[in-house]
Every structure is written in C-alpha cells, then in structure tokens.
Image (cartoon, rainbow, N blue to C red; front, side):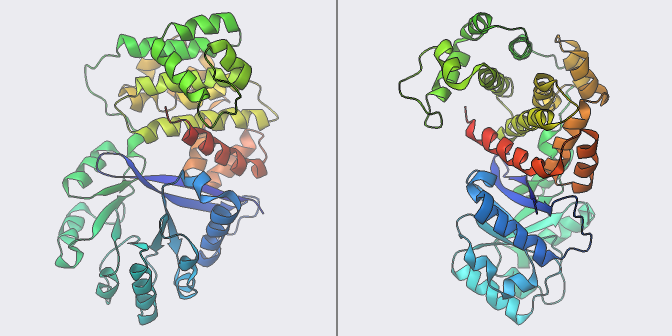
Length: 402
C-alpha cells in the first residue's frame, strides 16, 4: 500500500522554519474513514524513518509526529532519534499516571514534547509540567479566551505555538500575544499595500524566467540571457559545482553546465535563482513551496495521460505564490509580463485544465487527501505515483539552497 506523507511548516517569530509536522494518509484508493490514530501514526513512523528517510522528508528539521495513548504506552517514541522527533500528544490522550510516567521518562532523556489542541481539563497540570511546547488552535477557541488562557501561571516557561494561522492578520495577532511558533499557510498570502508598484528589477527577472522557459529558446540564446546577469551566472555555477552534482572537473561555463545537467535542468535552476532574487525579503519556505509546486506540477504532467505542456505546468507552479512574493494581486502581476493564456487563466481565474495540476499539488501539500483523489482523476494521474513525485519534489527543492 502506498503511503501518502506531506509536511506542513512551522515558523518562529522571524518566519524562519523551525520544524515540519508530518501529515499522512494511506493510498487513496483504500479510503478508511474509521482508521485509528495508532495505525495512522505507525504508518508515518515506519514510512518516514524506515522507508523514505526522515532527512528526505524534513531536510534535517525537527518532525512533529502525533502519538496516541497506546503508542505512548508501547514506548514507541523511544525508538526514534530525540534530536529530530517531536512527540506530539493528541488532545484525546488522558493524562493518567502511566502517560505521566512515560512523558517523564521522555523528558528526562531529552525528547521534545508538545501538546496538541490544548485547553485546560481536569488533571492536565501534571502533564503540562513535563512538556516543552503547547499548540493552540486559533479555529477552535475565541481570541479573548486564548488571551486569558496563555497568561495562566501553569503555562509559565512553556513555548506556545499558534495553529491554523491562515492570514497575515492572524499571524500579527498571535505574534502580539506572545506566541513563539506559528503553523499554517499565512506565509503564502500576499500583504497587499495600496499604491505599491512592481519594481523594474522584479519585472525584468520575471521576464527572464518566461523567456528561458520558451520551447523555442536555443542554447546560444540561453547562454546570452544568463550571462547578462553576473549574479545569476555566479549562483548557477556555484550550484552545479556543489557536492550534490557529480563531476570530474570544475564547471566554468554555461555550456559546460548544460553538458552536465542538461538544458531543461539548467532552465529550472535559473528560474529558481531568479525567483529567489525577486523574493529576497520573503521567508525561505515561500520560495521552497513554489519550487515544490513547480517540480510537482511538471512531474504530474509527465505522468498524466492527458497533458503535454510540461514547461507551462512548471511555470504555473513556480508563479503560484507570486502574489505573496510581490505583495500584489495576481491579475496585476500577470498583466505586466508576457505570460501565456494557459498560465494566466490558471493563476488569475483558476480556469482551464492546467489549473487542475496546481490544485492537485496544493491539496497534497496540505494533506487534503479527498481532494487529492478528486484531482488525480481529473488530471489522468495514477494515485500510486503521486507520493513518490511529492517526495522527489521536496528533495529537489531542499537541495536548492542558493
């Protein structure tokens, strides 16, 4: 059975990546609405640590993993490295003496412990004393109630994580309340500033991305385009000379780089470098998410039996967060660059067949598995290949650290 695993980022107050929470589901053709928490978490553990590799999924960051009462009693958390595993105790775990003792041992051995969807219940104080972090769902509790709860003396010294933060406004509210960590997709939303204009340098870089991804561009023209920007040339050559690229001699020119990695990969790398220059003041995870979407959409198109426009799918994924990167409405951005109708229809209006690949990638990243199943059918992509495509896209994006 194929294991579906996605990761949701968790940020600190500087919007730097702190950790990922793992979201999972088994193969969508075998949908079990009654699947229990033990089975779910066991699948996460066996797949992530033993089959796929935690390093591949999280890029070396901490991984929040849900643990049920039974798994705690079976001492499963002790099987995994304390340096990268966050033992997240679900809200329905009763703090009985056995749970308290297991958590006491976990704490004494250096494990990081978090409580999920926290609110005060009878007997919870003994467990609270042992944890490092408490997660509070901003969709489950009114803001005034959250404010009253987090100042209780029992929570003194415990780090607070605001969960389900979906807008920049919610991030600011939680930030001002003193939360130290934030989970949700607020980072991928634009902060529209009235009267703000797109800079000429940003437009130039977007035009470069579009130009180099044209099917008709040849190597000679590609060289001239890239070499025109010294910083892009430097970053590209630095990347292809890195340890991740197998080579015998140092690569010192664009033409040699093409010989090693191929013209298509060169186009992708230059696109990502250009995007990172556009988004210089944005969270790294925003760029990484765009990279994942670009690779994900492209690969989904290659696996589809009803698509052939892989280069357009790559750009659709790459530009999916452009409104958040530039803090401008998508329509304004698309109107200022020579983008194809397929891409503009998908990104501005959510129209056309191509947008289905973007939706599939987005829903997989969020772990919304029912919608993944729906859009897998609409894009003619076999469900069994999707997890592997996602993991490859994450690995590719994580390796790109320009």
